[in-house]
Length: 222
Image (cartoon, rainbow, N blue to C red):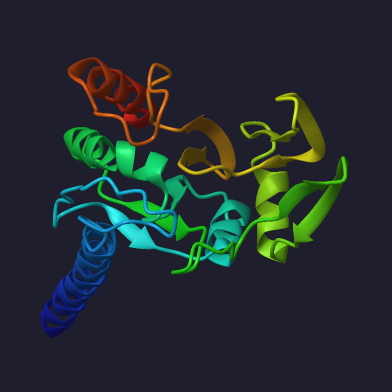
């Protein structure tokens, strides 16, 4: 009898421990995104104001942790983005709304930039005198993620002065990228934004929001 009581107590502690951790991350996520409301970026462009649900499903993670989960053949959702990213801010509210509707209570979150908007994860290439030059070397974990997610990722292209696309020869994790991994294999990737949205800061009309909802409903319905 005592053993059953002890096991029950351990289970309760474990559950509340996980819940407390998730709640802490959710509050941090809300704070990180909402702190930019009413602010402008370095170019003087206004950040889109967003309202983040305090019960959002996001859990902060590292690229190394995601690689490990893939190697362990786990099933999970992961979101690559950043609070500074205007396209990310366009879709984040709808992502949370639809995730909750589909009872998704855990999405791992990896921020791609530091507080100054500098890359902390990915490679970066630039065109210099017409030549493709790598200016930032991505982390080792990022390179592993490119291999693991190869089947769902898009090509990493630059645009030259004539408006033509130039391939870097590798793929890229863009932002926002939401990826569904099943048994360690990347199955789906969506950006979450409507193809009819042409500017990251334009008003989100009902049409655009309806498009976002369809995208996320399909993504989270697994």
